Image (cartoon, one colour):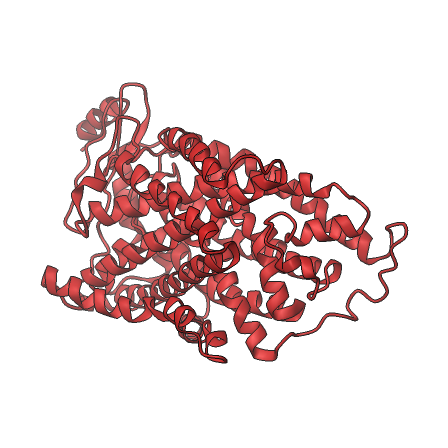
Length: 529
């Protein structure tokens, strides 16, 4: 054994052999001549822990926080906005804890885990719906990006901006994951600084610190508009803006030390929910009246609550500053959307759920066909200006939000099966590096919320009944239960029995550990015994 370890150690700088298996999990890493590390499926493992932590904290600060929350404020009032984000926050927190428990043990995203613990058809369907989530997010962000450019000039047609940024992001997304990590790291710091600055402004504004402005009682006009209908209208907005929290499961595939990075990122979810969503819900509620006519303006920049508040405070040209912030968040969000959507499509293909062509990888470890395939959907954003910006944007947000509810609820169900199978096969709970508290009660609460939110998010289309919005709000739900059995029929698979669940394969070594490969494998085996 000593000779074998010495042999493996001497070969480590060049290549570490890996074994693939039918479940699609990863058994190790390999390195090229320049020392770059790649996971077994060919993706480059170059995202550092500090990048993952900041991405987890700041990745959800997108243009939706600057623009879209204004629409939710107008429909539900400040109370509806806060309550809506709070309810969905509970589902998201449980779902993220579930991801943390599973991904610190097994190196696989939730689509693969769905195949291992429920059925192959279920995993394939969840993977496909996750691609839908991020493709629709990508379209929405391009709509925001091109619309924000109107603040600078109206001489350039919006479709031209789409082409310009499509070319820019096509080049950017073709680079290795190191670039993605560093870009999100830098933009994350800028977004945190900007958001903190606005919170300071909101406090000063509400306290009467702005000359010529009498705030009165900032919570005196803090109503719930239209009762439960107002709260329900904020659900889909909240789901779309929360989308991305679960991306840690995708990003972990290219992380250097997931066992350390993932638990920290999961714990940061609590911080970002309070700091970003609760913070913005309160800040907007005390600085912008829910019935301000600008909240329903066709201009992306002018309808932003921050623009309204800063203009009211006396900064007449604040729209240019906010447009710059929207541009920055759009660059970050589109960069993330392309990255996550392409990796989700790659995994969907790599596991045999779809055409193999999407699993091709270049020498930089980038799934280039998947990248450019998802990116081409950005041109659908042009439809939003043909059909009416606000209507088309609302449709896109609805699809993204409903798909997110379905994926999140599926992750919670997958975790229940994971934990029950773990105990059934005799593994000790002490072998879990990260454990979900109060299992299974929190999971059952999350499932109840997920089902409830999926059913009531289209509440507003019934009175009066609207055919188009109804289809948009509910088409994905029956589609999920059609695609799932079709996949299982195609693969000839059934629900996985607890005795047949595989907990042994898929635990990869962490690259930041200064131990050889054989030792890592032995250590990983000890974790589960």
